[in-house]
Amino acid sequence: MSEPWRSRFASTDAVHERMSRQRRRDTAPEVALRRALHAVGLRFYVHRRPLRSLRREADVVFPRRRVAVFVDGCFWHRCPEHGVSPRLNDGYWSAKLDNNAARDRETDEVLTNAGWRVVRVWEHEDPESAAERVAGAVRAV
Image (cartoon, rainbow, N blue to C red; front, top):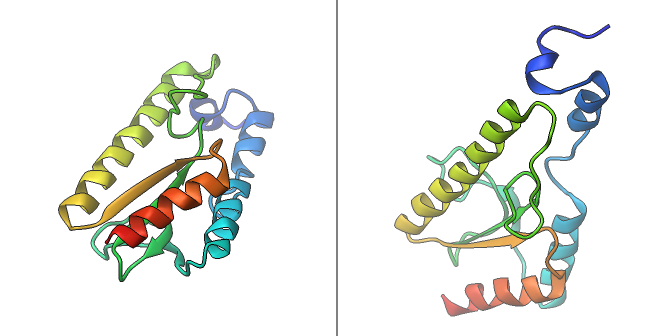
C-alpha cells in the first residue's frame, strides 16, 4: 500500500525503495578517484567539512593545501553532458536537481572566498586524469 507522503517525492513505491538505497558516500566513482590519488602519492581526508561553518562535506579534502574535491553524479548535479530530467514527478525532481546545482555553486563560492581551491569531478570522468587534475591543484598551492 502506498503511503500518501511518498507521492510527493517518488512516483512509485519501487522508485522510492531504489532511491532510498542510493549511496551517499563511498560510491564507485569516489573510490576509483581515491585509488588514483593514492597511486600518485597523495594522502587526504575523506568526507570532511572543509569549513566548520559550512554544513557540507567534500568527498576528498586536503586541509593543509586548502583543496576540496567533490565527485558529482551526473543525474544529481545536472551534468551538462549526461544529466537527464525524469519524466515522472517532474515538478519535484526539477526543483530538487536545480537546488542541488545551486547549492554546488554556492559551496564553490563560499570555499573560494575562504581561500580554498575547489575541484569538481564528474562521475563519468576517467579517475586517472581526474587524479592528475586534483594533484595539479594540490601541488599548485
